[in-house]
Length: 240
Image 1: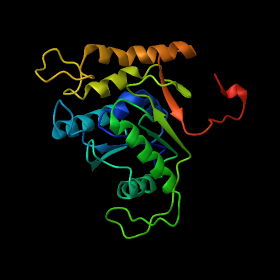
Image 2: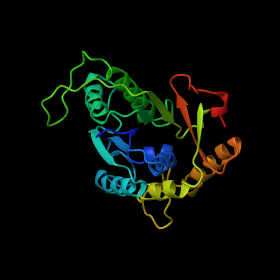
Image 3: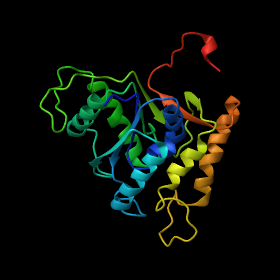
């Protein structure tokens, strides 16, 4: 399946939180978008791996993504090594995305920065023809494929974005997808332990952070991304 965008997160809900409105907007514009979760979030304080599986499935339906898979890497303990890179290369070559969006390059959770580097390295290595891979269940050696660009969404830390996307009109869909993770976020009736993302302040921050980025570019809501190379345009008039 050829995808336009492949969004990757270390944990189920990373993609929704980081770029849910952006991918919802691109899907509305006719783009094919898929999500890969590296882990099942099994070390999370609230919920279980099984509830996260169900929640991520529901969130994917709400966003309208074309496919979602889980790599089942070890939450907290996966490595940026050859074995993990090869497994991601297989997926990159299978989906052939033009754009990959992945975790923040630096963040509070150790899996975020680690996952960011793992994905970035796998995207580069995926373009090398002398690395031979076969997709699961197949027999044919995959053709090399390197995405045109890798973007990193912004997570816990307020990193300075390099690119800001107008997502006005898509925040409701993003919030619906986030709140599909019922075990993870604010619920006044929950008996689960409190975590940094389970407070009402955190849930509220999703909207006001997007509003603040929107304010800075003159729109209602926006999502920010950092880049690995200079963004390029044909003309200065392409910039808003």
